[in-house]
Image (cartoon, rainbow, N blue to C red; front, side):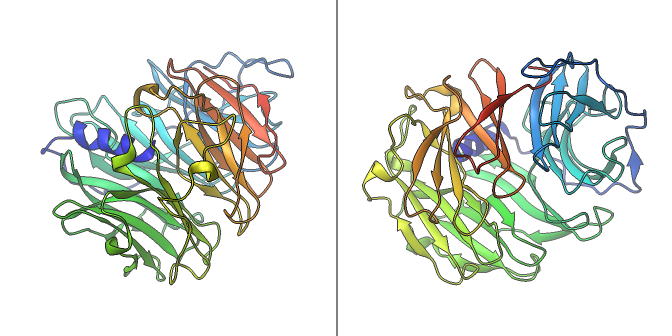
Length: 411
């Protein structure tokens, strides 16, 4: 679950995090030509590309990518036939990168990624960019992680609306159980230069999303007082205004995630932290705005009947919402930290009426957490992650109503 993962992230950090630094000049870090993988048979037979899936993205009904990690480092694989066959993109290993943790393709040539280098001292997070379909990657932003000790990537929450405008959340200072010192950084020139879009005072950034180059939203959790805010911007992050104030939330309410498929339509899922145990939470809320965050409607309050989200065949922790247009959206289920949910997730909540009603759709029959990406209102991918680190891939061409398993490279 996103917020629990953020708590673990905070606890792992220390007070000696290096401030983010801009690369003095673009550095090409993967220059080998693309090398095809071994051939594979149609259906669910994966090609022998080694590694574990760490990130993925889907562009069309046929085209998508997965990032793979093994002991030697990170690599990228692409399918052009809906997962029937896969081909390595770029070198066998991307130099200076242990893993690709987030991946976003704008088109078949332009993409951004959040990478992690565990071999550097201190360890560092890197925003990478490519304009040649992943054959080469260029460092665009580097942020130091806690020095001298293991820890998470100091970069997260990559959002790209086109090939030039990108935002990323950076941990810039010490962490404690309440949260980390964070900033939202932005670029309007594909990462050649960066600016600080938002720096909280006495608070930590939770999640951020943008619908286009102007309209965006983020959540922040106060470190010196109880409560959370949801902020909005209409100028690309140059200025921010309170969209949902802390006094509109219950004292123990916290945001899980945001989704904004258009500049006017925004959804926010929250939960009551006091209702949670290690194996589940009992109270969730859903809010929606159809005027860009100027006003909000509580579609489902925390004290609403849990039947709106507790459906037969689905269970576990609710994750961040994924809406693809003003009506159609999904909310995936997860096992929680450590996979402790006794229920059997492996599914999604799906709505076709803007969140007024939901139904359960099972993606897989195994107990797993599900993560989804959509190319458009109909075409999407889901990857199920089991507690023993097994990954399985699925695709939909009907907006998530049905899912078919597809082959994944690696494991």
